[in-house]
Image 1: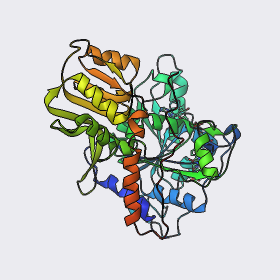
Image 2: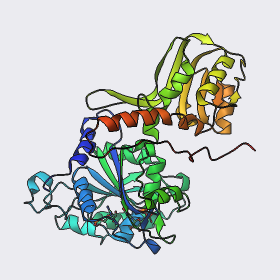
Image 3: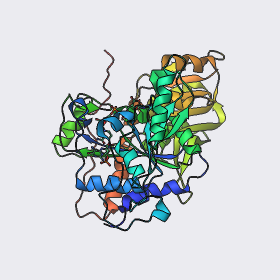
Image 4: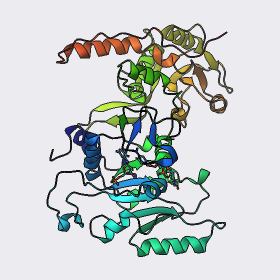
Length: 432
Ligand SMILES: NC(=O)C1=CN([C@@H]2O[C@H](COP(=O)(O)OP(=O)(O)OC[C@H]3O[C@@H](n4cnc5c(N)ncnc54)[C@H](O)[C@@H]3O)[C@@H](O)[C@H]2O)C=CC1
Ligand SMILES: Nc1nc(O)c(N)c(N[C@@H]2O[C@H](COP(=O)(O)O)[C@@H](O)[C@H]2O)n1
């Protein structure tokens, strides 16, 4: 193969088109075992990717401006972050500024305390003309830190060729810089696309700042590492149902928020229930409408239903109960005007609290919200309707099954498929 696989080009080419944002496009990518471990006991580096997947990783490296790892990975693995597995070809130093045959991403190390070794391979490759100059993202020491020591380490790293990117002094919560700050600083320095390779803490940080991640590509190795391994997140118990599926030969595809957002997805199904059959109104995106390369709208976070004529709350409550087939729902009435009629309903399947923040509507309708989010909403003259996280999602399954069935029938597959809805999958909590 002499060019990146087509699916990578399709996924990552869209980065070239997004112009106005102040952060780079981010690809989070790593390899894990079935039990969600990315390294062995004590951080032992493991080869979890097969040959093809490793080559894919190296192609991905050629497709980004920057490649970011945490200092844990830099110290533990002493990585090179280059493209040595790709087919040999002539270097083009005048184009690339180094003797590697392919475009190399700028190595970026998140290293608050400047612990990177001046003898590391990244710096050695740079000084030998085989790599790009590494950037070390750090933060100015606070008054309590040992500034003399920090300045000495900075001098040593810069002497070895590194550029230090110094962010404002903390304190930062848990000593971690918010991912948005890291990304904005890198964008200001010209990084428009960023590949994030790990390790565990960095992956956690980026999953927490998930709204800044455009693409996640995970290689899952068919192996178990065991509880001693390094994990970024889920424990074996959390993954039990996934593992049972894998053991029975069932592949799992989890569309998650994408299915909420897409047109004709879960939020639109909830909006249909809110609109009912008699009332005239319209549905619009609540936030963050996304467009394809051709400029077609692909979906948005949440929906807003606007009725032409306001309806009473009890009519809306009845409608939602019928649509979700629920005998009871939880309702918090506006503390300002408890019987306020409803003209606008903000909708978000699952857990809508963060999506509703700053949105004005007569009603927030979602599965669950935190206690204090509910208090703030009713105090701000908004009714709240909560139906339980999965109750706002599971009722959509027949609609999804019909869509899947029709797609599978029209697709040119040699096999035939049956679409069935699980009869055992249900809300994990019961009223007793
Ligand atoms: N299987 C795979 O694909 C990969 C596995 N690994 C493995 O991961 C392990 C290393 O993981 P960790 O020890 O968790 O190290 P890490 O590489 O995630 O680095 C953690 C350090 O990075 C800095 N950092 C992370 N997030 C930050 C933030 N938001 N703000 C400021 N600084 C931040 C902090 O200094 C933190 O101590 C190694 O065993 C390595 O082999 C690493 C990369 C990929
Ligand atoms: N894709 C992938 N699969 C694995 O099995 C891995 N262990 C890793 N590790 C990451 O790659 C870095 C090493 O890069 P070089 O081989 O030195 O270029 C390592 O530090 C991890 O970030 N990745």
